[in-house]
Length: 355
Image 1 (cartoon, rainbow, N blue to C red):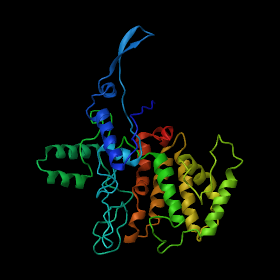
Image 2: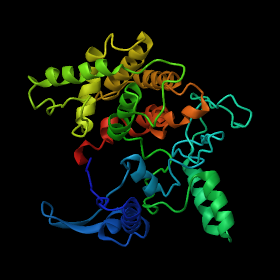
Image 3: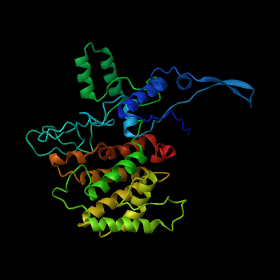
Image 4: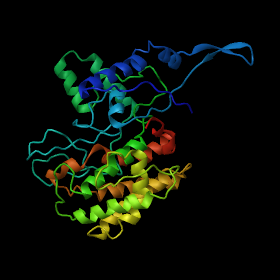
């Protein structure tokens, strides 16, 4: 397997970064006018020094990988705040009607309120996207005669237009772009959990639960984090700072080591209820299972059911005001097992090489 970098998203304002990202993906994939595009679609005449012959060198893209925003731009989706935010299924987003919230969240369960009309979703039977659905929506967008109709199609499909790499027929838009493990778990889900546990998640309290650490407990965990790694060789993990004081130096590797190897020990008997610790440890167990070099069918099934149960127990509480807890990365966990079945173990598509 070869890793081919298409480019980097430049610095600057968010709008300028996204515009330039779109320009990169359109040039490399959409119009296919670049040398890379020619290589992908038609092949290039190449000399084989061993046989003294020329041959057509072709590259077939079977997987695409990147963080959530990068993939949204690659597929030309409306994105994680849209009515239909998920690239893998047709879950309909919910927003805080009472609080006049503008953003949609991918909550499985609908708040028990009369004005929340969308039905709850069964995580074991989600309405999955298909490649044909993408193609149909793209064709409809191309054929529409008015901007109003175009916006309506985009809103109801979550698709804004023709994706980059549209001439690469080996890509299945619904299945060839897995939820990338490093960004999903280590840079989204785990930091979100820490923010919830420390009372730093979007100004939300614990609601009807009691999962926050008291300040002195979290300070102690930070001190113990520093002590726990000071004698571990750098080949295993970089130096970890006091997680209670400053997390700015934590990269994906740091989060992974802390959560998988330290947290089960450091956080034992620190929560105000054992169910919160058990919930955390269940995710640790599943993460260890997922990073195996080879996975059997029953292990993938175990991963799928385990992640479903983990998401169902998550801190949302079916409270409309707590919808922001239902981030798209939390929902993305429900699609990881299906990605493994189609694309292979998570190491085939993770992006540690770019960290």
